[in-house]
Length: 497
Image (cartoon, rainbow, N blue to C red; front, top):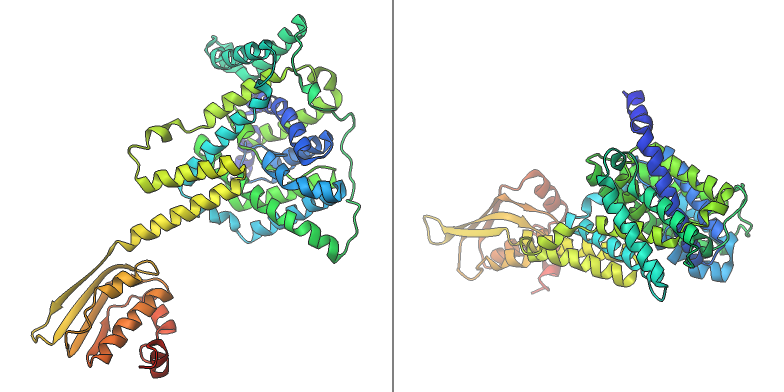
């Protein structure tokens, strides 16, 4: 079974995986260079990182077919570190980031993805689509008209080539777009921006090197905050991307293995002169759209990337940026959840607020972690408010008008504790009060405190109070934290009077 699964992951889609890997490698090059420039390091740092991360994650990652490399979200966090302390501190930070991510995997922090609601995922996807599109605007402003024509032609090829009989389904249209636009640009001698204009491509293979920096507490205090931030953003983006690819391919992935895999990949990147990276939503979708499904597509993307930048840089530098811009526009259009716009009318207001808030925060801060944090927080608050409304307390007088039974149904926790208290009348002069909680659940110490107050206040009015029906979980927390039967604690709670 394990052998069969491994064989399927690696060789179940060989031809399409190899072709998709080639397309991804071509799209990775300008982005890796651009992210290196953002971080303030030589282009080879981003290119070496992309190669190392893609190759390593193919073997140790938890999500076949997902592309990991140097990313803009991670590069933005490195700027001040590189500017202040230099490349070696960045490499050390990358290695430490990897160690922290491996620790996160062993702590099973990947399971935290279960707390991310679908509306947050949709907002994350839509925000990334917008950011991918906005990232292309510098290549489309203050440029010759030929760039617009070439970009439009590229989009035409991407969307129309799949309809060509036989060939349309055999060869990914993004690859045809790159080849055709490069031939047109070179044959017509167009004066437009190319990959070669992005920066000098490396001409040697990456080599093993330990970061040269002092091993002491002072150095650790410098790199740790950056490594912690990179760990959080890297894992967040990787796990969110894994969730999206799961949905696109109708398959599941091992999120905790992905955490460990990202960590191992970043350690290798740091030891071979690369910067920290993570999963890339745009490149992963290019891979999926180009037919890539297995680990071979990720491995081949890394290998093709290295071969091209080291051995074929002369030809690679000829590719017009317009071709890559067209591909990324296709990715942004394909990434955006257009159905979510139509669903705004049908979905509850709270769901729409969570989705839109996630989009707005990510787009304006360019920080995926902030957006997801806000989305998860809002979703939790709305959920708590909704659940707190499912609380009903009814009452019924007994045979004697001095006895009464309160029946509690629903969830009692911090957000419904005050509402629970408000259902009881302590001034009726009752002799006996029965509180039936067999259809209720007490979740936290706020709920226990509310129950204590009800019991204590009725006793203060001279009533005998009996609580019936506590389920096992509720009884455990009430027995542990309840104070109704502790006279000293009661006096302290009620202010001593």
